[in-house]
Length: 339
Image 1 (cartoon, rainbow, N blue to C red):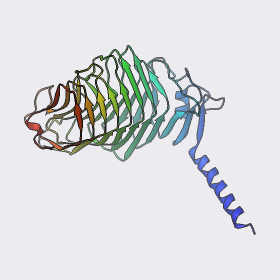
Image 2 (cartoon, rainbow, N blue to C red):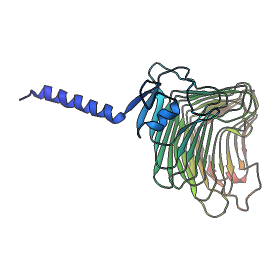
Image 3 (spheres, helix red, strand yellow):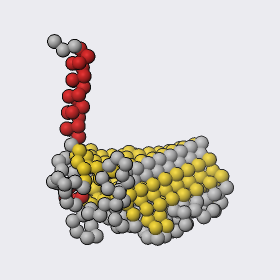
Image 4 (tube, rainbow, N blue to C red):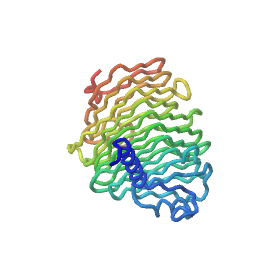
């Protein structure tokens, strides 16, 4: 009989081996199919739930056709190999096309000069999960965004956008755009560093919106460091739906963010725009200094006003406002926001 300690060690080694096999790790570029061609061929050729580690700092052979983006349509983790910081060619981005309930994670890459990550949630059922972490988005002298997330299917989309860096000078674009046209979007945008240091024009830093009566948002935006002079707001939510009276609750928690302007005395920190879609927001522990307007809670200042405009609900608590031109700009729609 084996000693108990030896038997336990054998069992542990077998468990580790089984875990490694289940993870199905691949390295790109490599000399072995399917990862011996373009990164797109590797992504398309591996099995579901595989992990692809990019073992190059300046990869060039990303896609099969010029001016294309890398397309991910299956459960997959795409990450930098240990010790690497892959920088994609200028303008080459990533599109996650979720036509079914899949799980995708993208970590440790740099996209630049107009490239971003676009998530298209088209699954009619189930829960799609997308994680975007430790990315860098760098747009110098050109327009470019960071993360664009839309759910147009009837399923649920769970997002985690965390610990990313965004730098833009010149051009236009926002770090995060989140919109639900159907189904729901839940999750977090947290611990990101957003920097537009030259004061170039931008409507939003992070914008969250609902676009139909069959959509909803339950999102936490927390501990982000945002520098920029935004026309509408560094963090903003807008409620919109085509049919008044058919309401789907949308909640936004804006917690412990720090917002400062690129140009002192210019731009807006936080904004909540009332529409015909129910919106609830908790604004707690944020720091907003040196802005033109720290907080704006009004009806949407763009487009035709809907026949019915609902109030903004939620609470406003323990925030630090200092040296702003206007601390709070609020209209009747803000009356239900507890202070």
